[in-house]
Every structure is written in structure tokens, then in C-alpha cells.
Image 1: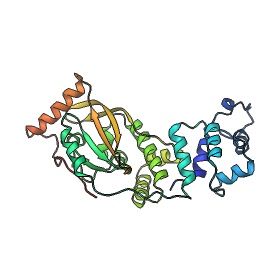
Image 2: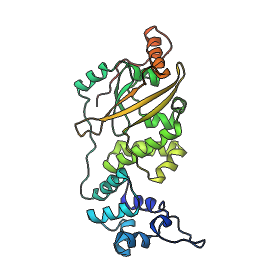
Image 3: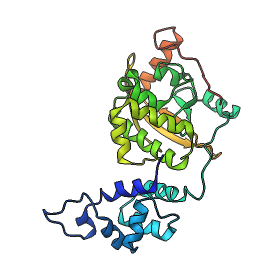
Image 4: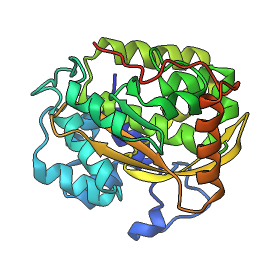
Length: 283
């Protein structure tokens, strides 16, 4: 699903030759670096690097990978992805699964003033608290945020920073594909998104990777308006590939008032949504 050769080609095409000391002129037709230039800068033979990009060379050493990462200007996330792709033929990681532990579900119940979700590497929402269901305006079971973002009309309207969100989601799925290349459910999801969304196809072809850690998320809720929230991702300490996501509002902010109003509408029997309270998906 994801491969070392393709990743090297896309990264090579984005390096400015001038930034690595290679003079250019109007006759240059190659976008980024040539293969032989990468090989020279990384200290490997041209033949070996060509075989890497053609998928014919296996098990490059850690030193070679580090040299390529330096030449290609990879950040920490991209470096990790490069090393995982190179190890794929040696060790295939099994896609994690299993039930959400009851203890984690109790943690969700304790989060009352902010939407909170448990999500897996495929961006399937496995559990969510009441405010999460109200934010998305739909039951949590069956929600996949990538599918919601790219294929569902309500998703496009909900995310005020939709274009940025699409970059984050595709970058995350690229990382997941590198970690779990033989996960059939992930393969199926990526195929579905590629068939249904031209933007997804274009972003996927770029082979960008992004690690989700924290940052601003802005939602445009149909009932309470704009909600500028802060998303914090907490990887769960069980090597499951799952995360606890909490979307908090700054104290005294309009977003805090909006979340309070959203919770109040539901408590008063308003039209906020009819999500299943504390809905869970157990695999």
C-alpha cells in the first residue's frame, strides 16, 4: 500500500537543488534533484540508489537511510516513516484490534466539559462522550472521521478549516499505511476515499506524512456557531495505535460558551442532535 521507492521519488522531487549547493539554469528539466545527485550527496553509488527507487534493493542500512534523510531534508516524522518503509520486508506489523477497555470508557465519562473521543489508526471513532456526539451531530458508532471529512456533505460543512484538516488526515493515513501495510480494512478505506474524492487522490499522490499531536481545530456547528477548540492527542500506552482526543475550549472564550450552550440544548431536549449518549464501538 505504501512503499519506499515511491516515498523517495516524491521527496526527491521537492528538494531545491540550490539549497544543497547544486547550480541550476533554464535548461534543467528535472523537478527537484536527479537520482545521481541524491546518490552523490548521500555517499552511495548511483546504481544502488536507482535500485532503491525501483524497488529492487532491499534492507538498506541505517546509515544509508540517515544519509538519504539528510539529503532529502526530512523532518522527524518523515525520517521515522522512511525507516518503517525500509523495514517492511523484514517485519510486518499486525494491525491492532480488540475491545476498548472499560477503564478507558470510564475516563471518557469523566470528561464532561469537552468533546472526547477514542480513535484508532484508521480514524474510526471507537468511543465518545456525550459532547462528542453533539459536536458531530450524529451517533458515534460507525463514524470514521476521514470518511466524514471527504465523502459526507455534513463533514465539509462542519470543519471551518476543511483544507487544513484534509492535509492532516491524509498525512495521518500515510503514516498508518507505513506502519500497517497489510491491514485490509485500512486498504479498503483508502481505496474508498480515492474513488470518492478527487482531493484525496491528489493529496495521497503527494505521499506527505503528518503526525497528529495537538493544535487548533475550528468547527462550524449549525446550532451554536463557530467553535475554536484546541485538540490534544494522547496515544494510549498499550501499543494499540489508538489515541484519546480531547477538544477543549479556552476559559472565558466564545467557544467555551458555545460548548456550554450545546450541552444545554441537548439537556433541554432541543434540536442539537440525537446521538447515542456515551456511545461505544467494541471490536
